[in-house]
Image (cartoon, rainbow, N blue to C red; front, top):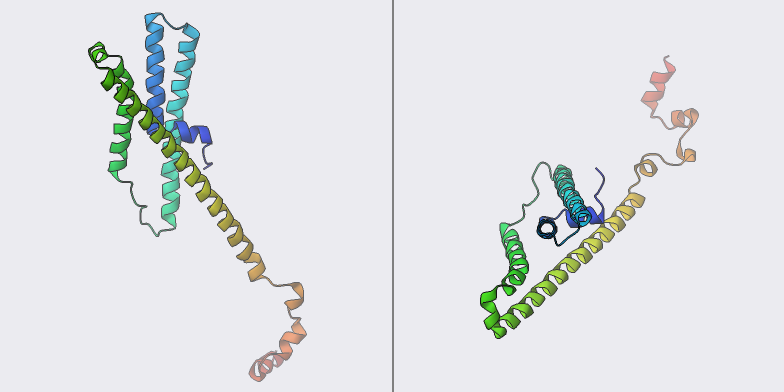
Length: 192
């Protein structure tokens, strides 16, 4: 199975897909309120469909890749990811979406210090999320470079044809092979 492209890997992640779909829902709401032109809302629906397709493609690829990797482990399944990562991602998503929504509440407009703290908190969370995404992409790229380098070096050293078959001059002729046979083998050949 072919590895998905960068955009499919990016949009196919559940956290990113949720953010994209929330944005599309916001655009659809703006269109419903009459503040957005119809063709932009239609483009947003197209983006939503592509995002859902990317999620499915990435899930299929990850399932195939885990089966492929399990073959080398003699049937043992690869280690499953822990659920605390998902909990942290959901909390981060709720904070990234919930803080801007909370900033628009009229009840909080009387507390400027709280609003400023929430704005700075949202900026810090956004920078944290961007840092984590960029670090993950950097680590993945480094891991792929290392794997490709190891695969190339392993292929050049372990070429089965070069090991199994030597050069043509190494192959003996029939006469030289008969000369190297033990006496009892030569007697068996001479009886024929």
